Image 1 (cartoon, rainbow, N blue to C red):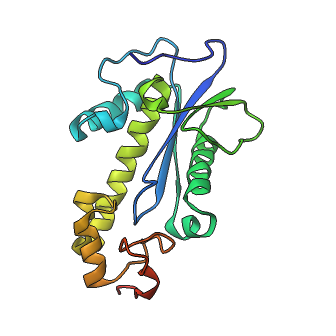
Image 2 (image 1 turned 90 degrees about the vertical axis):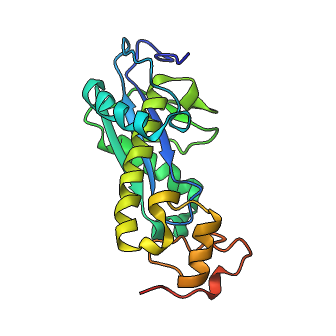
Length: 203
């Protein structure tokens, strides 16, 4: 059962990211401040939900949250600062976009770069423990999925509609066949064998 908060007396924002392990596309993050009495039996770690359940939850979270926001970091930035820092930066940008300033942050994972002096707690598998992190995981995942669907329309040969940019066999076979796109993360092991530096951009 998800916990409603860690600090009842503070304005608490849960943060989570989506797309960290992908070969292509931006990494997304969400920050969500829920009311202390928020209840929803369906809410859980987004990875435990079906696509339909995530999209059912998204408007509920957006309507009932005190505040919510999305942040993203594009592939060029990921390649410059590495994916760990990019994940933290995406969370920072999501927090930046909140219209209510949180007094405490609940971060999914075990590491975080401090944000503007706001105290925080990192929680391993926090999206399965706290409602605000679970809500953030749902928003980050669905907004990133929407983004990957748009990219799929531009580059259908990579099957991003299905794999969302993750390193599936089908995705890697498409990279071998068609090369890379401007959306691929060039510091990643795109082919799984370390030979991505020889690839050319697909135009």
